[in-house]
Length: 203
Ligand code: ZN
Image (cartoon, rainbow, N blue to C red):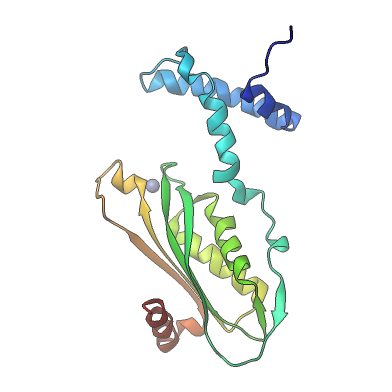
């Protein structure tokens, strides 16, 4: 009778040979990790945990595999100097200093210069840069730079508000603290346009 293949084996079968070898080496590292924190790598309940963690990385760090060339589709628009905002884009990212999550919302605004893009594309570019090892300070700049590069707008502004596990679960353990970061390009360097953006967010 054939033995039943585990989820871990099924998962490894679909990886490239190189990735499969790395995944197997990672599993050994997890054994050291379990022992290091005081648990036991031989505890049967932990047998499939390395596989589940490695599999979850496909989503958590999926931004590395995304190609920004395939995200943006551009449409022509009237040149009216008006502000377009996509707000409350929820995101989940990982702090590169502690490998702990930080998560919250991103708001994106831009003033087109004859070209717009589908709103889901703005959310996708946020996802592309959030699903990597990140710093919140850099995240907003990555998004602003990418939109500027693809759309060549008159201005772009990106702001993020997030809770950081490295603040809440360790270190200083401040539970309600949130960090806000902003990146501005072009016309949003102008105080009035920036104020207009934040006023519209409060609607
Ligand atoms: Zn951190």
